[in-house]
Image (cartoon, rainbow, N blue to C red; front, top):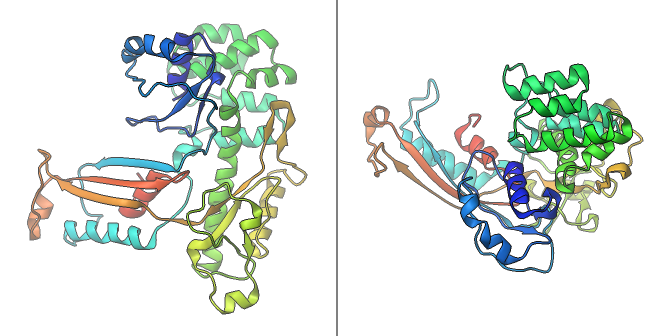
Length: 387
């Protein structure tokens, strides 16, 4: 997505930070989303339609608007997904159609644990985006730059360029090695060449990214902590609502509701089973949230101590980043879910008895998810398998 924005920026004569959007889209998908770009007329956008089609992009529904978009400013996302080459798990001899029906019914009725998906953390084996976010939260600007430019154990032009940079800190020389399509890396290196590899130079380099990209790294770290927190919460208390839990009694909440809507469960409410597990929320850390008053709250403070954040105020003034925090429901449900089994030629197939295991099948599944929910996590629950 950043490559697409970078390409559009060049064609329109603006910079990537002039673009705003409500969310980041998957790399390996056909995606649609609304964007707002400042300092560009609708006519100018229409003039580049043919050019950007060569890059497999289309712009449509072009019109003037009054305001920029902000991250999270969306109701949800719709997904159409095909899962190919379906087969039973090892040692599962159930009828495949029945197993699929059971799995889908299960996620419809019971929901899924609302983990942040793996794409939130990048695919790097050596450095994940959350590690960069932690360095930024601790104002370790040089370390964050070096983490961003740490190579993987692969011998390709991108990783050779990164390796050269870590060995030499020669931004100009690295730029000559870095492929053109690595828009973010090149923007960062150009800034480092201009300002130098000092603390202040690295701060300026981070400003070559739009605000949404800078905050993304900190969100990656906060997401990792939230994933660990929900695993700890469920391992400790299961699906009971217990004293000290945080709940939100309103339906259809997104992540950005205020602390005034969050309630601390009392001992009496636990005994009376006043609340259900789908109402329990956990904090995504920040300066403006409260923590559970039970073992989970203690766990958060132990994690902050482990990661050197005991005195962190969750603001990075040098990068104009504020992290107020929010609350995330621990369970979510897919909406408007439908599915269709297809054979090799995209026709409906009858699956009777043992014939099920002879046919190569695909599953077309469609559903809506609330904002900040991950289709990969919903699918993992259905398939009982990493996607």
